[in-house]
Image 1: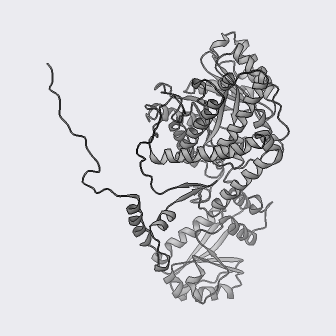
Image 2: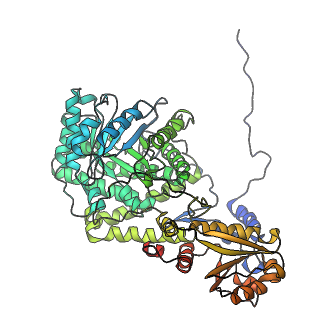
Image 3: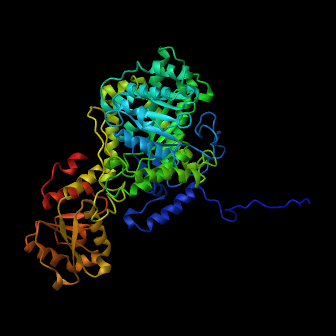
Length: 620
């Protein structure tokens, strides 16, 4: 039986609504913005656009709205310029689920590797060296791994040739066909210098590429790991530019050693940081492929080899030691961004990575985060799922152009090695880091659970610490460290501050919540006393006290409260909000949104308790 065709009409979601131009939208937006502004601060259409525009470190602006660009050519996945990925994915294994192992106890690492492979992980990453697994233990750690099925990669920041040699020896000991082996030898001498200092030794690269070309044909010899720059404060465009400059320097060195660019491109992969800024992560991966493909085009590498092979790793810079459970959410968003951005391999760092070596539970959650996204979210059912979004395409273009500009400047000045030696790279990253630090300190860039909404009375998790290698390379710092230093100053005592909540609950609740969360950032307990009228104002003594209420509550009770506190000998009185709300009553400080929280809490702790070690502000 043949069914007749069904006639249907395309449903227009905007049908019946008038079209709005960008200028008309801005006028409407100004009307909304101005509703909460006094007459002397009202804005026009252009002012509304600026008020709603976000600014990322490094000069990238995020507009409040993006408009479709008619006729914009998106291109196709698997073809130049590879912005949209290296091609369609296998729905059964859309990307390589790769787990990191760096426990120096070889027996522990061997068990963990097998445990991961039996429970969803598809490849193994061993960090080798004095801060990880010993090179002599690599073969033992891989005893139970079927290397013809599971790719293996190594990394090292103190002896990359030894790590690579240990991996090759382990493969050879397995007796499998070298042509079926997959993985990477992990050579990145410029990255090692960025992490440890010194001068890069590129002489090992040609032999490593030859080993892969002649024997282990499915293996890559070089991994350009830009996470060292990310951890030193690099913006997304900085990270791309430095990855390009480093990789191009390797290609040029190999060319001088007789290796064709086409072969070099086949033997290089990239390892980049994925952050909780979902769209920035998507755009970064797309921009890296686009710019690397352009370099391949200039060097006449075959088109099929120009698509950058990318291993995305959830950022260690974004992880916190305080309230580490929030890292689960950060890692999930970062993993989603990496998947949507077309990463070929993804590593989710365990939620306790910043605290030390992971547990079996934290490794399980890390691998299952990937498995859920790969198997249940359908994120990889289509290639480049974010492609065509006006926002994503614009952000990709901004990052690509900004990265290409600085890459060109670095290249003209001698490349990545020269930039490290001269200090140009360190200066650039320090400037970006300072910009981010300012946003972190004022909480314009909040860290949930650490700089905002801290977990009151938290007992920090304990983990076995990793070995920290000395060196004179780029600094490595997590965003939350300055806040964690504040918490360390109060970790060994119950430190409290009197907080006078003035007036009825409706008057003081909002400001009291603000103060409680603010003090909690440093682990200080608010000692709340409610005063509903002048007769109930208590006598409080001590070095510091805070009063919290609304302007109405201050008008009624601030003068009496301040007088009582000063009579009791309180050295510093702080108002929650603006001191202007108190009229003629003078106080010694303000606690309000937009202030430098780090400086405020650092000074507060100086009054409440002697510094345990260095002041937190000195570590910023």
